[in-house]
Structures are given as C-alpha cells and as structure tokens.
Length: 327
Image (tube, rainbow, N blue to C red; front, side, top):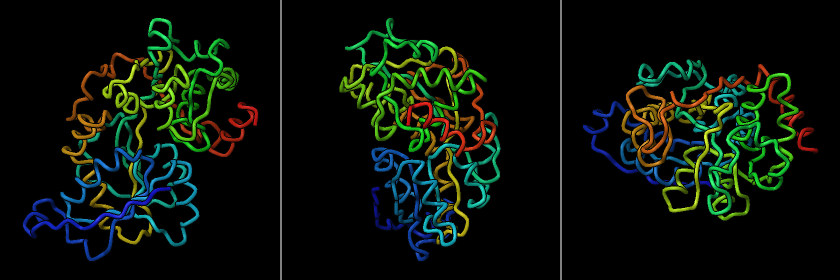
C-alpha cells in the first residue's frame, strides 16, 4: 500500500467560483482509493489540487484489495472516492456507493453504459504486449485461441484475477468469447502463464524479457513503447475487450462534497484530453479523440464482456479461476 499526502494549493475565490467548486478545503482532504499505477497518480493529482484548491490523500492498492477494504470499512468509511477499478467490481460494491451524476454526464459515450452507483472514467483496452527482440509480431499469437498452444508455456505474463481487475476482465473476456467452453479454453491459456504481483508489472516483465509476451492494458504497453522498449502491441482478433473502469462516490465518506468535486474534475474535458494525450488512456467522452497512434475502436473485433453476475458472481468465478490454475 502507498499513501500520498498532498498540501492544499490555494486558488482565489473568483477562480474557485469559475470552476464551480465550493470551498471544501475546511472539510479536510479528499480521500481516494485507487488502483491507478503510481506514475499516473503522480501526474494527475497535482493537477487536480492546482485546479480545485483541494488536498488529496491517496491510498494506492490493487483493485481487489480496494474492494475488500471498502467493504470492511462500510460501517465507517474512510474513503470518499474509489478511482479507476473495473466496472464489474464497482457493480459488486453498489450497496456501499452513493449515486452521483457528474457535471459532464451528458458527454459520456452511451456505449459505456449508465450506472446508478458509478460513472465510467476511461475506456480500458486489453491487449497482448510482445517483446519484439524475443518474438517478432509476425510470429506472435494473434488470438486467445493461439495463446492455448503449449509452446507458449512460461512465456505469457499475467496478473492474478484475485488481485487485479484487469486480469479478471481478461478472464471474463475468454468466458464471453467461448461461452460454455470458456473455462476449458482459459485453463489451457493459463497453463502458459507466469503470474506477476500486479497488472502494472506485466509490461515490465515483457520489456525486461522475463517473458516474451504479457496480457496487459493498452496504455501500460504504450508507456513502454513510447519509452523506447522493444515492445509491440497485439489486439486479439477473436475478441478484444474494451470496458470502462469507473469512478464512484463512497456512501457515507468523510468529505462527500470534495469527492463530488474530484469526480467532476476526472470527467472534465481537460482531464480526459490529458489522459488520452499524455497517458494513453481512451476517453469515455464523445468529444475527446483516442491516444495518438492507436487504432480506431471500430477497426477492432470488440467483444461484449459478460458481467460477473452473469457468470455466477465474483466468489464463484474466483473459486473456478483458482481451480483452473491448479490452486
């Protein structure tokens, strides 16, 4: 766990009014639980503080740990906002979340759904990252089906579905693509996995040639590509998942008005443009373009990913996942 305490950056009263932000600073910091990797938090939080005059206290955990901690604290919540965990996990937490419609809700693309308890934050694209020094893109598998091949044993990095929202989404994708055969297909793919301790570690494994490939997020892979790593990106042809992660207000949190201000800021056009331009995340807004150099979503074979409750619920899915990986 990492906790970041940030000091209040003052704005004039006129500036606060122009932003539509009431003077929350006396209410204490906005406490945010997030699964975002540290580099994103470190880039975005100073902007939030500067633009709103609010102080943020950030607790960074894996998405599964965030869900467990938020549930455990439901009687006396410590967090105001949950930021950037999967929509499926937020659906499972709906009873401890407070409905809130952000200021720019009408600008959110309806393909990402309307959810009473949480708001889509970015569109997360799931990809296969390939170390091109170890394996050319021509030779690399292009589909989930191809990843079943035993020749890839020990060559595919993946986070664990019991600790990573993105790994859970990848599992849900296979189950959605292959229907009744999904668990058998996933078991064969998972036999080739090398598990990492977080989703953010997957592209590092690939870049360092600890594995030749890894299942990760498009923006995580793009960060390494732009940093000069020998890495290529494959959008799997038999089903690319594009799902929203979300941002949500915690019911009964200590600073609900500050939490609402954070959600408004996260969904603003300026923040969403920064996410696409500088971080490689796809915006959920209809008026913000995708990251430079990425394919148009219309050119991908996008699969509709089943929700956890359609697959039996989180506990049943995790129990079957553990069985599939031999635990």
